[in-house]
Image (cartoon, rainbow, N blue to C red):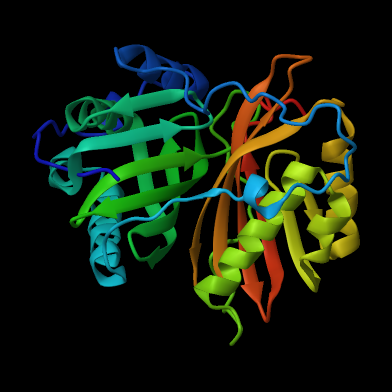
Length: 323
């Protein structure tokens, strides 16, 4: 979705880090620098069935999320991701520029930063690189038109691990979406279960992953903890990075989702979207409540083997969601 093009605005990173500037304030400052920055995370979620019972089962059509589909082949997407990863690791805005599409869109679902267009995004990336002391790609996965990356970014005050969804078109990056959990206003590493690294089983085709994504989205919208747990393998590894909850079986999954779904009564999960690959799916969702006015988005990474979810990792900003 983002297409990177040259705008030679590279500056050295370490020398411009401010020791007295907290990481949280640094990100806030970046948002202020962007004249076009607006709150991201989607529009306020309106509970679709606030009066329904938690286990009311929506139709597949009602629950079906939007599938986000890029237009490139796996090879083209992988090449774009590899080039992007190298430029990111080098902290070079000059190298990043040619990678972005002119109409690139960027959303950070932890800070609320939204950017439209290459020039504005490169300006933001210049600021990010200026305060970054170290950056590296931890893992990546490419599918037709889509990629999912884990990135680590270090600044003077701390570090964070980012899950990033990337869409490509014509070999250019046309969209980036960042997810991470800020803890105590600092840039802190996510307690992740190393997503994207489970080898899929023979049955886990993209179609099987899509079926799992649809079933998960339907269970989420129905607020049915038992239905979520039913998708799990007996040996599932489960991590909620925001609450630092770790589980190791369907029972843990069901208990955790039952707690999430418990309050507020009008909690609703809306606007689900997803991307899928061979043996994995990323489901993006918005959680909202009319009663408390809260609304926030998140992403759930699912890894499948032999038709069951073997690893499940939730990323969201706990200060925004209503649960």
